[in-house]
Length: 438
Length: 74
Image 1 (cartoon, rainbow over the protein chains, first blue to last red):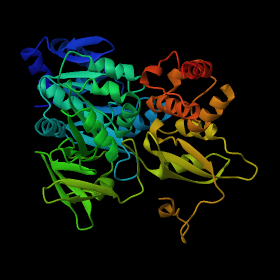
Image 2 (cartoon, each protein chain N blue to C red; image 1 turned 30 degrees about the vertical axis):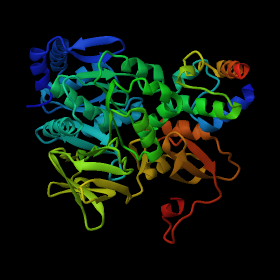
Image 3 (cartoon, chains in turn green, purple; image 1 turned 90 degrees about the vertical axis):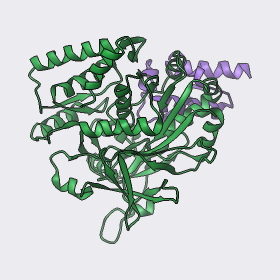
Image 4 (cartoon, rainbow over the protein chains, first blue to last red; image 1 turned 135 degrees about the horizontal axis):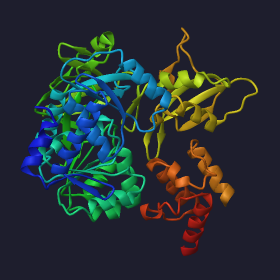
């Protein structure tokens, strides 16, 4: 069984049940199946067939999800790419992928910086998709009546994986453009259901608490659960949210594109333990290695990095993924995250290798040297900051540098802050001394 | 006040074209929040998510009007 088989099952069992809501448009499971089948015909006519690798730019829309499901139905592999990806990068990825074949059973290739520090295509199998869905259903109690608001990008593990349990159960996906206009979010919460749920990155929770806390409290009886993840959340925000939503389940989850969804913790349990990510889910196993890093096993793991066996073997061996996250298991078997062992910077759930940003910035004539570091922002938490040594006679033009990087890399890799400095600290052998800037 | 707001926002949102008459469409959720935060801190006014409308964030001039109306309410 693949996820899309459940669209057929649900169209038969619950034909009139609302499957997806977007822009005031509703489609039922019966309509969703019709749309997917007609898209399958169109794609087939266009020459897409089993085993093909199909890049598509993601968007929070019904049509995007129909494309995604139709690609799977054909037996092809979906490659959802970032909204706003520069054309040059889209074409480069498409060219690169056309040279590869993927193992049977591959459903998706998701691009991430992930645990290796370089942009890599992570292969996700249909089996992993079902295992992620069942993990979430079992441990976060997704149910047939759940109406889940998706506000984030559907090419990223945080939001894409929520589609899986919802489709499997015949539940409702509610797509909104983002959290820019809080009205979109609150209008979605007005949907007539008391099983509303959503995924919010910590920065979005901070925004809601700061500007709309009282309003959120009015929905306390409607919100069944909120999941967060992707980045550390401050305990004061966790406590505030518990206070505002005393009856909702509030989860903090350990997941990554490579590992799938592994553990979760309901911090609205009266203890509200900061940094705790809970127990392993039914299809997952956590091991802490001798050097203190987290290793994961189970059906949710990626199949490997597309076209890069060497990079795959560097983190996936003996059906185990060895991450760079440092963690501990307590006496209850709950996972506690303690930081990262490498230089990758986590920006609102997106992992960024600083070298990738630096390499682009260094190709500007005015930039003599630079380092991309993590800086603290009152709302966003971690953001990227670029420290720049300018060539003589040049002035720091933040906007020019930012726009240049935006033209070469995904939007989340563009630093938010810029500062001119005299020198970048280096180690005795000439490498950037990243520890100095931590 | 307009120049003050421009210089405040230029530092915080280097990617955004502040002279645009379609400022709102250039912003993401972080940009909107950053503007609300900076203006409430700088002018000691209370702004919340209800104020973050496309109309209020259409341009720098509409931001000036928003701040002035909030100051008048104080």
